[in-house]
Every structure is written in structure tokens, then in C-alpha cells.
Length: 243
Image (cartoon, rainbow, N blue to C red; front, side, top):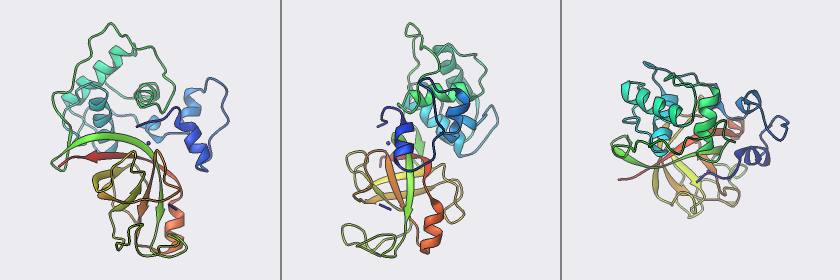
């Protein structure tokens, strides 16, 4: 099967075939938790992992310095999170909860805001670009991911080659070039699949496809059609990296 964020990704989720709970005009936090997995992540000082990396990159991108994107929730991450919570008139706990995540995601157009930002507050700026694998983070996108494989069933009519005729290789992803430029280095995380690297992987945006438009990516997997199909449609975080 071949997200700059758009107004509510809820429509994108539904349009992509992902089940979205029926919502009233003003969805509740519980309903929104069912839509984006970040809403369920309770993070605090001392935690580690790819969700901490997501939090750090998001805060840095929104202008709240959270230190390096290293997946370690330390004092800089806590300070950045508390500054964000204060500016958004949330309880300043230094711990993420669904309401805090809702306001973070609203900064990318993925959720309605849970609070009103205090625009009179001075917003601390990131001290420098976040880094992953020694590369600066240029953009952070919350996207929907599908997967494709080397068979004609998964990648018709190209089979084991990409749109440009090059052999498909693990780490390649198909993108919308108007969102992520071709040949960009990306770091993809947030998925759940036993056949992809645990926690995330560095890849290359080398392919494109008619169905991959806007906030969508397609991850190449050198696996059978049944394994590829089991990936389904999953929310992921994509970091576009510089040199």
C-alpha cells in the first residue's frame, strides 16, 4: 500500500480506514485517547524510551527547550515540559498526562486544544536543534503508516523495485515529496511490529506512490504479503533529519 500537520488528524485516521470512535462536536479526552497512542503515555523524570524521544522532539519543535532528543527524561526535559504546562495553564507537574499530550498534539494540528495558551507568557526558545544519530532534527511529523513488500500484490505494478526502478531495500519508505523531500534521512518510531527494529529505525525517503499523500508514509518490509498485511495502519512519529 502505497503529516506539516493538517486540521484534525481524526479525519485522516477515518479516511485511511482506521476505526475512529464516534465523537460529538467536542470530543472527550477519553475518546481522543483511543485515537492517538501518545495520549496514553504517562512520562516523568527518569523514564526512557522512544516516547520520551517523541516528547523531547515535540517540545523542542514547539519552542520549549527539552534538551537533546536522547530518550532520557532528565532535568532539561522536565524543565521544558513544566514551561509548556505553565504556558498552557495546565497543572505544572513535570509529568505528561492525556490533557498535556492533547495540547502538545494540538500544536501540530492533530487535536483540538484542551486549554487556552497564555500568550502573555514568554516562551523559552530551544537552545539549538535537537539531534538524532548525530543529525539535527529538521521537522517532526505525526503521521499514519502502512507497509508494503516486494511482491506484486503489495507493490503493484513495480514488485521488488521502487517507483523510480531502484531495488527496494529495508529502511526505505515511501513519502509524499511535498511533505518530506525525496532522499531525506528519516527516523521512524511509534509503530508496533515484530518484523521491524524495536523502538524505531533510521531510513531513507526514496519512494513514492499514488496513495501516499499528505501525512502518510509507507514502510518497506522485506517480508511475505501476510506479514506486510498484518502491519495494518498505525500512527507513527517521523523525524526528518539533516546532514
